[in-house]
Amino acid sequence: MTARHDACILAGGRASRLGGRDKPGLRVAGRPLIESVAAAVPDAGRLIVVGAPRPGLPRGIFVREDPPGDGPVPALRAGLAEVTAPWVALLAADLPFLTAGHVSALFEAAGAGVGAVLVDDDGREQWLAGVWRTAELAEALARYEGRSLHGLLAPLAPAGLHLTGRPWFDCDTAEDLRRARNGEPDEE
Image 1 (cartoon, one colour):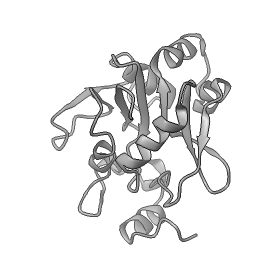
Image 2: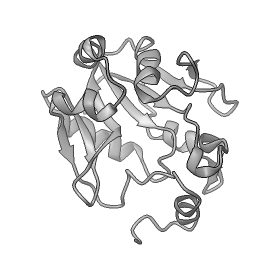
Image 3: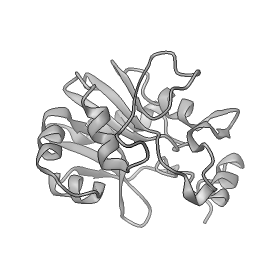
């Protein structure tokens, strides 16, 4: 069973490796990346998007970090302020292969712990593909002065979860986008 949760999607980055394009709005499999990510959290009580408002997300609560584009930690601060559920799914807006089943598996992996994150094929935690107990995340964020998600989240020691199908695959470059559009998450 999936815990009662909200979702916080970070969608306000600069997309510098994509030439500054509107990365969350880029289409893969016929829909914007951000809409695919939102579809992976259908049971979220609140869908909080840190980024510009999007017409395809009518239930979205849109907030911005100050200043916009200042990075994932300030974006998380802005988004977490809107979370009311005991758990939150923290996700990047550019995960074309993430599904509701993957998010449910993360909640199951978190169990009674503080959270769980997806782990890629190289064993690296993917900090923007995870679920967290809201209170513990807020507490850690309140005392954290750095700018790195790794620096904020790694000390919380979340459960790591490796799943097939590369649900952590994100679209940071034009090549990543090409691969996603061709349905090639498993090719290197």
